[in-house]
Length: 295
Picture 1 (tube, rainbow, N blue to C red):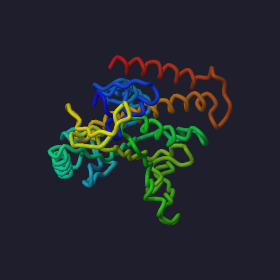
Picture 2: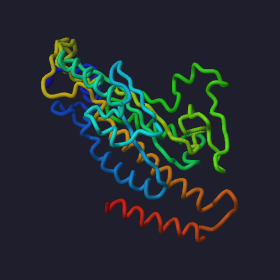
Picture 3: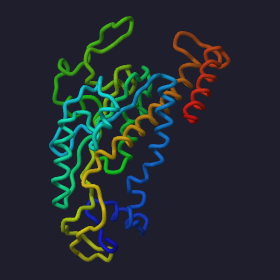
Picture 4: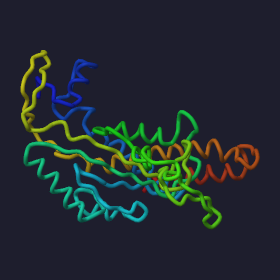
């Protein structure tokens, strides 16, 4: 590993760009880098809960070819954390664990999906064009190590449906505009619609495996490599808190921007920044941030 590039690892691209690479631990390509994101995400989650009652929760929805059956509206954090795989479907979690162990014993690795659900998200977060809410979320998720794809709502499955099948019909629920289905994944036109935001993030198999592979050395020679050291056979269970953190950070940013843009100039009439609404929000925001940091 000190002289050869690991296939599908950042070893080669980091060397191409910087002329140096971190052989021991992977440097910035390691998921250790995400500790700062998770710490900040913990504060963001508290902020979201205090200000708007938002809940950000994720789980492993697929490992290799093993999927699960989870109701995104009712599963809990306790169910997610009840097993090492971080899947709220207990039976599926057992099968996922077995699938991971099988590839580990062969010196191989596997990937899978993490599903993230954002409940009670306020309506209207996001922007109509370049900073669409799903674009911000996708950028955040794709910045995580080993992530290779993101779906919002129905995703690629929805592209095969007819409009009459895919459209989320509106209805009134106790004075609130709701949708009977949620194929949009809680986002329409780049803005949140008040329904749960549902995203699925795909993570590739771990690059570093202990099976023999063909590669190239830093000097340009074609060689064979058997990687050494402790490496996770599947990174997906570890990705759950990272996904939650990035989602919380994006929604917290969008919530603050929304208040800055809309609460000072509400749609039902102009008002100055010195109105009681603005003052109350600033006071509430300051106390909420202080409480979140203290907690």
